[in-house]
Length: 120
Image (cartoon, rainbow, N blue to C red; front, side):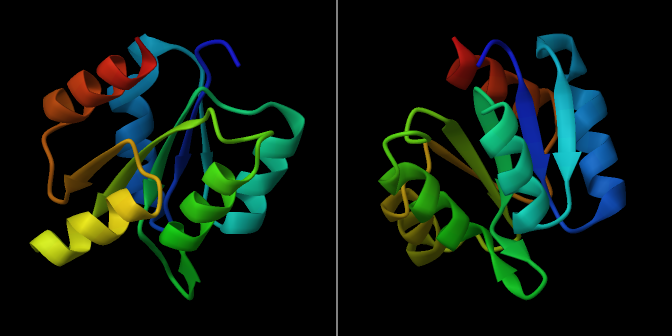
């Protein structure tokens, strides 16, 4: 696993911003779909996945649940990002197995701190 971080978001610009924010922590790759994310996970599981809750027609929550339910991937730390910050949204993210839930917009500094904490 090493210090590999996978950023999964359907918005290209946001993927790039997150990648730049986290590059000091190690290797950062990006994926725009669940299929792209799973290709990375199969080949080289990340230590941390920064995962958007809403991936267009796909669900980041479902991906989170699937990863945490599989013994081969359950150790991947997952930081969920979402524009939805109500208590019920956060609870749903944590119930899906997320290790941390952050609401958009977020500061790159806060994201870096949260990611570093999860990778420690």
